[in-house]
Image 1 (tube, rainbow, N blue to C red):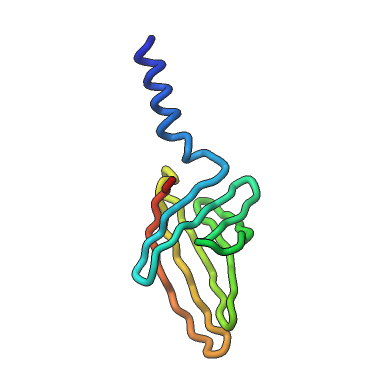
Image 2 (image 1 turned 120 degrees about the horizontal axis):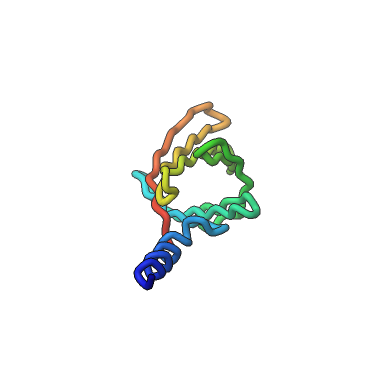
Length: 111
């Protein structure tokens, strides 16, 4: 009986951050690295130190937009099966030149 209780306690301690209301991922790519934090209760995301943005979901994907000066950014985040990691794809569209750039990041859940 003690072994079962210890196993359940261990399982809850190890996997409880995955199902919390906020999930924080550390993303790395060729150009830079940063944290992104998803607040599932408010359906907002914070990228680095920026202001929160609203996001929407479809299946295992999370989407959001942002803009600065002459560029619009489209973000697509794909969760892994266990939600401990993900892939972030960013499309940068320059409004004056109409040039599109794609940036890929690998993200892992952090504390």
